[in-house]
Length: 73
Image 1 (spheres, rainbow, N blue to C red):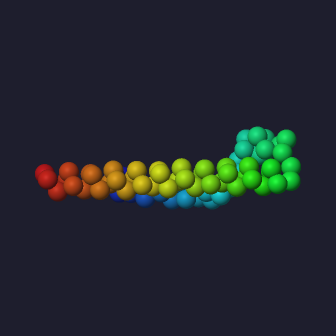
Image 2 (spheres, rainbow, N blue to C red):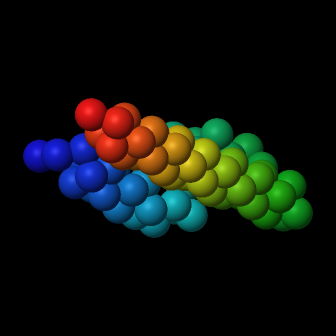
C-alpha cells in the first residue's frame, strides 16, 4: 500500500460519522439534562469535527510534502 492509498483510507476512517457520540461520551453527559445537555452534546460534536479537519489538513500537508520530495529525486 502506497502513501496515497494509506492517506485515502485514513481520511475515510476519519470522516466515518464524525458527529456520532461514543458510549464514553454519553457517560460523561449522563448527569446533564435540558439545555445543558444540548450544549454539551453540541460542544463535543464540534470538537470531534475540529479534530477531523485538523487530521485531514495534516494528511494533505504531509502528502504534498511527500510529492515535492519525490519530485526532487
